[in-house]
Structures are given as C-alpha cells and as structure tokens.
Image 1: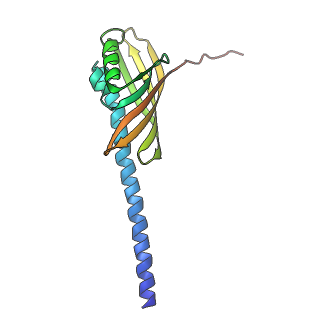
Image 2: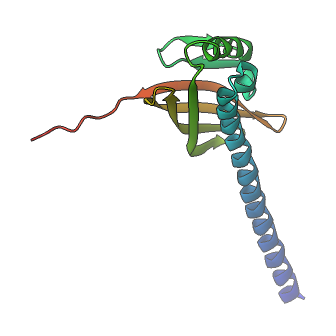
Image 3: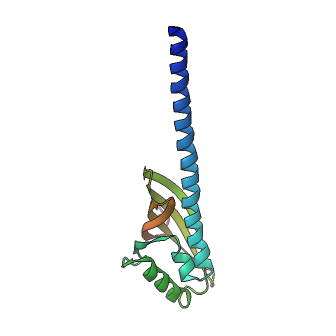
Length: 159
C-alpha cells in the first residue's frame, strides 16, 4: 500500500512538472508569435504609408522616442506624426524590420530589440536599432515604449 502511494505521488509530481513546462513553452511560443506580429505590423504600416496601420500595435498611452531624440506620447500622436512623414519626407521609402531578441522580464512584460533598414528611393539606406518595451493586457501585447536609435556606419581604420 505504501509502495502504491509513493508511486502515485511521484506520478502526480511528474505530471504537474510536465504540464507546467508545457504551459510555459506554449505560452512563450504564443507570446513570442504575438510580439513578432506587432513588429511585422509596424513594417506593414510603414510600407503601406499608413499612420494608423503603423500605430496599431502601440498602447493608447505609448511613449515614443524619435530618432532625433524628441519624445512623443500616445497612439493618436504616433499615428498623426507618421502620416505626416509618410506623406512627405518618407513617401518613397521602404522599411525592413527584423526581431533580434525578445526577453521576458515578467509574463506580461518583454523587452524586444529590432534591427531596422530604411531604404530610400535613390538607393541609399539608413540603419537603426529599435528597443521596445511591450506589455500584455487582456491577452493582447502592445508597445508601451519605443526607442529608435540610428546605427552609425563604422569606418575601417587603416594601420
């Protein structure tokens, strides 16, 4: 009887550990997929030249640090500001984004690093590194903070 009880306890513990591991793996996969989809949405919105589509993955009260260091706040301002640049200075550009890393600080907070290449119509390109803080509320991931940093091309030094 004691032997059967011990086996049962071990089986229950093993099952609980297995279920917990599966939940974490499934959750991480679904969350990473949702986060990557938000990055894809940024790129789609940019390339469609739609401020509203670009702003879609941002939280209503998002913070956004522009490449020149200026800070703006709110999805509505991000939408309007981007529509303005899509209609003018970035009208003939194409953006490529690649998610480099996703680090979960908590189950509902992640830091995401993204590489960006902005191609201009005349053939030149500029690179940036984007840092995102994403939060999950009501099973939806949103960008709470966005930092856009230009990447300076390194020149080769001759010896």
